[in-house]
Amino acid sequence: MERKDQNGKQYLRNLSMVYYAIMGSMTMFLAAILFITYTPEQVDRSENPPIYYAILGGLFLIAFLVRRFWKPRRLETIKSMGDIKEKLNNYRSLLIIQMAATEIISLFSSIFYLLTHQVFYVGISAGIIATYLLLRPSKDNLINELDLRDDEILLHEDEGAVVADVKNNR
Image 1: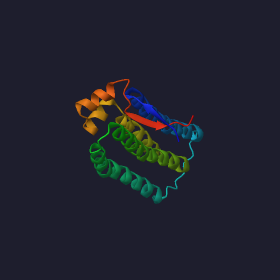
Image 2: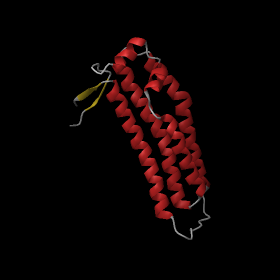
Image 3: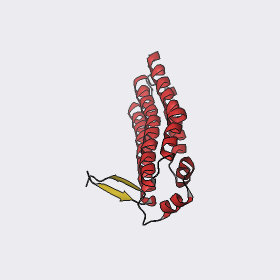
Image 4: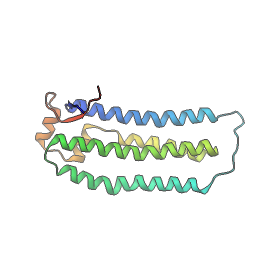
C-alpha cells in the first residue's frame, strides 16, 4: 500500500481530525440516545443489573492501566527511537489507543442508559466527554511527552520536512 508523507503541520492536523472524530462520535451517540429515550413521562426501569457496574468498572480499570502503566512504557520505547518519522508514527498509534480506551467507556455508559434509563450512566458518559478534552493533541504535548531535541523540533516546524507518513488509500 502506498504511503503519503506528512510535514509537522499535516501530522498535527491529522491527529486533530482523529481526536475530533472520536469526540464527535461520543457526543452524537449520547445525544441520539437521549433524544430517542426522552419522553415527557420518563419510563422508570428499576432493573439495573450489577453486571453493568462491573463492566464499567472493568473498562475504567483498563483505561487507567493504559494511562498509568502502558503509556509511560510505550513512551520510553518511542523516545529511544532514532528517527523522528518512526517516533511520530508510533506516537500517533499510542494516542489513538489512549483515545479509544476513553471512548469505549462513554459508549458503554450510553448504551447502559438506553437499557436502564438510569441518569447515572448519562453522568458518566458526560463526565468522560468532558475529561476527554484533556487528551486533545497539541504541539506542546507532543514535544513534552516525546522529549524532542531542538533539531527534531525544528524539523517538525519545517514545512518542507517529512516527519511522518500515513497509508494512502486513494
